[in-house]
Length: 182
Image (cartoon, rainbow, N blue to C red):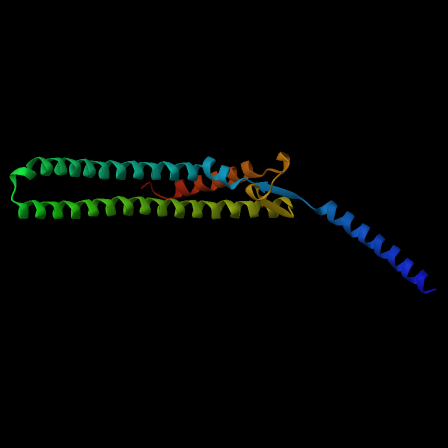
């Protein structure tokens, strides 16, 4: 008798699990977004990349010019070295080393500032893209939207990246229209 109760309970439990599993499968909708692609393709991402590239090129030109000036100064000092008093030469070399350290510091600080701006822009845009993914998830009845880089394989038909980009671009366009050009 005891074995019959256990068997009946097990059969009922399996039936219940089967019904619940079927219900979950029927209502389970998954999608994914490729954040890197969205960052590279969305209008805000393209504009941010162009702005940062322009800032980097401007900074590089500035510190390359300073570097060339330092190189010329060093060459002049080396040519004049045999003619200069030892104390004067040591003072000039000390001044030159100080200028070189300042130049190196300027170069590194400038590159670090640009990297920081890049990271801040990427973080801001990524946050916006995730918000739009959530919106698509809620409106589309998705159970789960994953980030593409976190999954080894995903069927391409589950990709919501282009929809997220479209929504983000539309919102970005609205912001551009309502805010004055800088």
